[in-house]
Length: 216
Image 1 (tube, rainbow, N blue to C red):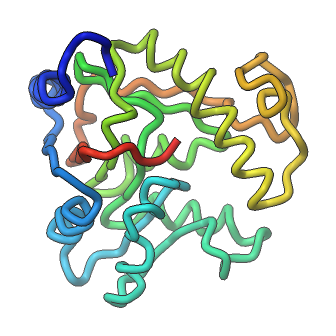
Image 2 (cartoon, rainbow, N blue to C red):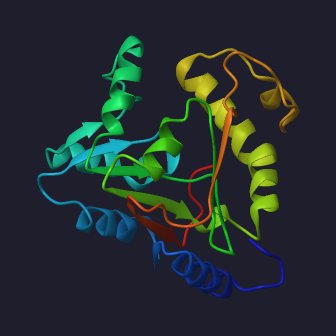
Image 3 (tube, helix red, strand yellow):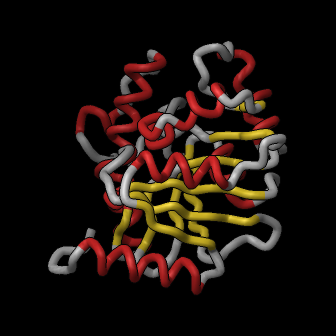
């Protein structure tokens, strides 16, 4: 968030900019309303692909989708064996709807992500008919420069720590330093940078901004 400006002003400016860039964009007050908005966007017969996302977990998306009986392609579901994750990632890219969060959304209307494998950024630009990006207000930054700085000093180190704890990956340098050191580790999580400046032609992309701090 930009200093000296109210949260409402920043959110309003971000929504206007996203819409100028041809994204659909809405604001909801809390995670409960966000979950309701997401479900309203999903037809009853749709297949759902997802990227790895702490924000979606915090909202309760995965539990709700399973409860409603949707066909869900979630590579990091505990029921998916490690050797099958790549196959599930590929299926997620052919789903009707792709759900994800984002590392940052800029006040001038851009969506910025850094990925290890690329399945998440791929699902946001081509393949599914619709993508829904869900972010807390803590993910809003002034511009792409601030977005990349946020990723290097907040999102990447904290996500690397989380993934290590959840999946037993090797310790990455950024976990120890608290910031990116441009490592060349085999299990590095920052391999692909994607800046979505305008809505991709072949996908309906909705951004839902939530009035809470969510995710990393």
